[in-house]
Length: 497
Image (cartoon, one colour):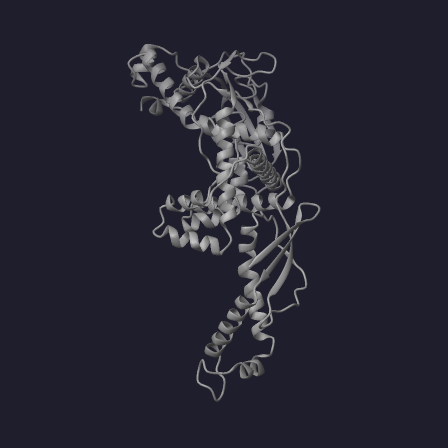
């Protein structure tokens, strides 16, 4: 097989592939033999029908057409691999009516859209900001405040106190539907109620603002389309609810004092100092797990901003398909519907689609930026290094899997994954990191000091070969959608571990 590549405009190339005559003849011979065994031809034993009989029964173009399809399907990915091309869409074949002929070489031409080779505005080390590795006083205090929130109590506020947004009150209420029928599920002689928690509609909370102990109020609220917990189940019974409310008491939340007694008797620590020490250890353990990923994401975001070009829509769409497939697989594993997920996140389907689109675009830009960095650094992958990846994959027969990948023209995908891994590792290793020692504010930036370079996290980039590689346990590299690392709450049990 011979391949020739000609560059066209708009990130397209013309790929010309020629298969020699002997290969074509061997394929034609094999296909006739396969047809002779596959079909019954009257007067001939299975596998013994001559070519003229097969042509007469199936049509003169049956074998050439079958061989042509096989040649295109089997040699195109190998030709792409050998030419080190990275297609981002399906090829367009020229003169698809042309069929192979016995004794003649076969040539086909395909126009292929390939991954663009953009440059970066700068190849200098990236500059990023990361939280400090140790636990700060602010973080420890925040965790203690969260613990206090678990052990609060309520006390009556002074009689002159008014109900405020986010406040609490002890209410007596009677609720009736639009038909005047009492709604027993909402009627109560005493209910401790917190405004803003979503138990009742926002319009209900608004009616309570400003009321004092002993005051009464009657009002109606429209519950059409409302999704709050207490009234959503009543939507089929009534469109509105009439409330008669009496404020039995305005309540205030009383948080426990942070004392040695509280730390010991309630939380099981020796004293406050022991509590702070254990919380600090827990925070620093969390940071040790989170910071490598945060550093990688920060480096990739800066690198993507330097990209001089826009990611092709085909790359974005491919990433989008991968993200959606992974997302809905996770939903299925959790036995959760898409509607429930949207409700929990407080977003609409359109907002979800926009977020996935943005993530897909970000991933494509990051990949192209890593490709540019690898080219600029003249990074290369040898055949031996590719073979080593299969050996490290843990499959039973790495040689057979490598042969399969080479036959399927997938090696360029593995090469691309390795190069991106090396690029992101180098970017992280050379990054200039500023360590934040306090909360970052626009008007009052926290004190900063240089941080020690963290060990680079070798997170490989997942490309078109990724999903198949996982299924086959192949050594293709894998990446995850860039996303902000979430702060994990530390409760008393975590602090004590």
